[in-house]
Each structure stands twice: as structure tokens, then as C-alpha cells.
Image (cartoon, rainbow, N blue to C red):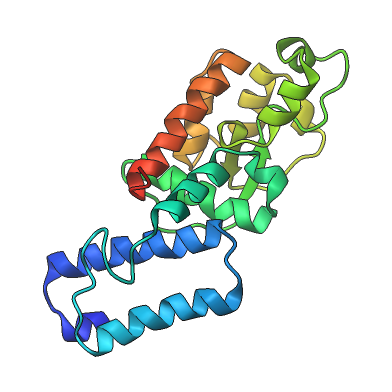
Length: 214
């Protein structure tokens, strides 16, 4: 609001909001501690109050450093669900889903994170056959490419369904999924390491473009 009161230029306001969004998510992903995070926001507020130009994309108090951008990409490309809490993962997936949605969803109600490749597949399942390397299976389980959003409660029994059944009886339980991230999974005929590799590359590039992390 402070920025709006001092600058009624709609283009500058839009740049400010996009850059503030990037900064806020960036500090969130970096898990920056409370005090230094507050200090960053205080610098932004002070710049607004004295009328400093802060809407520039890659300069000023809203900018992320080269090191910060590198560490953000590294975190996003890692085993994000395993390394972070569910409360951390959900907003990132929601933001990612909105980035690929047309139009974006403006409101999220009850949202849960689900693993397509289950966290604990049974030894005789198709999942174990498709992901025969245990270390590879463990790594892919918790990366962006394997995570989707659901707008209904989790079903512990359905989590280990084979891929085709999981799509029809779980992901589409209430019709077409609300989230673009989940809808993309419905269109796939299989779920394999090669597909996850491509999907990870695609999703990571979506976020890198959205937040200008290159």
C-alpha cells in the first residue's frame, strides 16, 4: 500500500508486486531466519518511504543476489519434500501450478500434497518394477516432478494404487483436477524415471522463468 500511495504508475506497481513476490518466495525457499528476513523487508519499506526507485527488476532492495538465486534453484531441484516440511512444499507447488495454469486459480481452499510415485510402494508393485533402482526411486519420490496437489483429503489406501488406477480413482475422484500441476499427470500413459527427468527439467524452468533465477 505504501508503494501504491507514492506511485500510481500501474506498470511500476506491477513490477514492484512481481519483484516483491520473487523476493518473498526466494527468502522463504532459502529458509532465511526471521531477523535477517525482517531486515530485508525493512530495507524495502524504508526505500519506499524515502521515494527511492525500487521497481527495477534486478537492482535495489528487491533484488536477489547471484548466490541467492543459485541456492534457490538448487533447493528447488533437490528432494524438496524430504528436505522441507509439508507447510513449506505446499505454497511452492501452488505457485508452480498457477504459473502453468491458464487462467491461474485465484483461491485455494483445502490443499494436500500427494506423491504420484508412492513413498512406500509394495515390493511386488508395478512401481518397484518401473523404478527398480532403490536409490533412484527414493530420490525421485520427493522431487518436484513427482509431487501434485489435491483438493480433497488424502486416502492412505489409495496412495499405493498402480498408476492407471491412481489417476482414475484418486486424482480424478471429483472430476477434472483443479490444479494444472495435477491435470498434467492425468494425460500421461506411464510414470517412469525418464518421464520424471523431463518433467523435472520443465517444472524447474517454469519457476526459473517466473522468478528470473537464471
